[in-house]
Image 1 (cartoon, protein in one colour):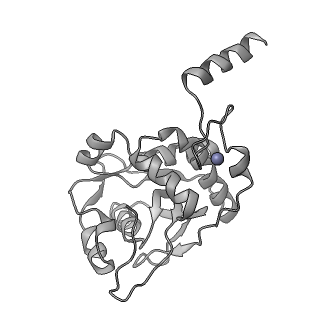
Image 2 (cartoon, helix red, strand yellow):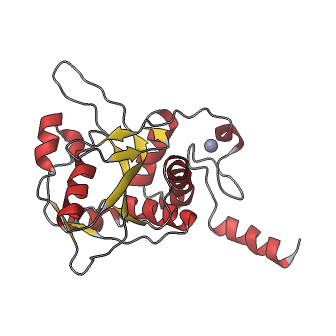
Image 3 (tube, protein in one colour):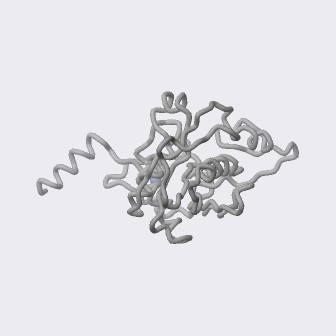
Length: 228
Ligand SMILES: [Zn+2]
């Protein structure tokens, strides 16, 4: 083994790499052999509500192994999945639009949530996707008011819940178009509220992207199944 190989070997012992889909140890990183053969359902592009036709793209449908992986990424501290997730978002964007010249920005979380979780999962995704695309990533928005967690609410409550909670940080004006990133898109109200905050500040949004799109489920009560 060369010195470089030894270095990599030791690094893998200290920071073992895991498959982002099933969490199996995968020396060298990326998907394990089994997951590489999985047929993952793609997410369908959707138009954000009340956004004047702004589209959100997602490489995956929020289901099965992807859903479990997103939950570990978001709630179990598995930020090490971000590079692979970011590459999938970058690939989806490249297949849909020409992202050249844009700036990637994440949907923000509140200060309280940031203290609890220790990281904004959407910022990790935006950084990783931006790196893959060779574009800048700017943390443009802030969530200045606490609200209920979206997944606990019905569709109509979700729309009201995200009004007046996002704004552009002071001094963040820019000429470039924004690609806005989130982890999961369900009703699209959160992304739409962020698009609206950006537009009110005079910024232009090219499109949105999420790692996974939650399929619409309309139950008799009108409730949607949300992300836990
Ligand atoms: Zn795997």
